[in-house]
Image 1 (cartoon, one colour):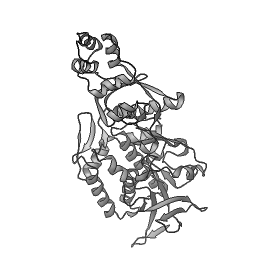
Image 2 (cartoon, rainbow, N blue to C red):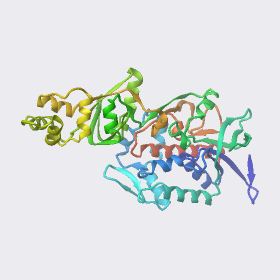
Image 3 (cartoon, rainbow, N blue to C red):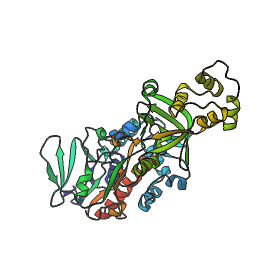
Image 4 (cartoon, rainbow, N blue to C red):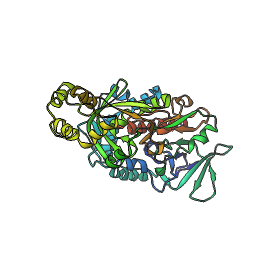
Length: 410
């Protein structure tokens, strides 16, 4: 549909389905170009996942070398990488500063707004969108398209209605955190249109481990600080968290894609944990060669190595503790842990899979549905935590907006 301006010129009307960061960013670009934008979101308020992700500090992007940055994405689709090149971390930081939220680099290279929170960024962002007359329709679910291409929308429990727009952007997120809106319900709708959608899988997730009942009861919720985890040729240093059914945390999330794929292929995956990455095996062996006297093995290990009780208990989960100092050192430096399954997708930080990049053109338009564009986690890509996820969500939202502008010739 079109609406006339006061001067008689025509304004194109675009529907954006999904008010997460990809949808909001596309709305900003389109509205600033004079396009009339209607945002629809099934939740009562916008960007709920964005807010939740920012509770512990909004990690917008990362400051590492651009080419290293791009290698974090898998699969490495040319279109995705080009979008990030066209809208790199520096541009995202400049955008945040334009909202009154300058950014800083943490010691790890992660980039945060000065307030460290998502809420001030979102608040200022929504004010900007309001100034550009972007209309937000909350509690509105998308049900697909009618036979003429109209958008089927349902406000709360009201009847489903078809509405016509000049272009449509789908920015519905992936399949994680369904209670915040990313429920993957769109998959069946698009598959029904003969669009290839790869299975949505958990990404940046924890994993199940068959711990003993005693270990579960005693050590659930216990962190493992400053460890190193290896799987295959990959080796990551960081922290993890033990819980009643397994292990999660940053060091696990960094390996989660490889671990998930190994489990899908073989039924399980083994990691090796270095509980003392800053101490060599030889030094540990020398410390452990000292007489134990009447100390229990646990006390002896704790005093000789500084290992916390949870780490020592985890060593026991792998079998009886070795007696010889060299063997104990090996257990500390390469503790095997068998992972049996990734956590369900609704407990994952993000998801893998989605719309194949072969289904979209260079403007992020679905080739089988002219005038319908897609962005964000709906597409088939994944990345580790650390700012890479949001960077690509913003970048693809921008690319889709530019594609809509080209399609509408505005």
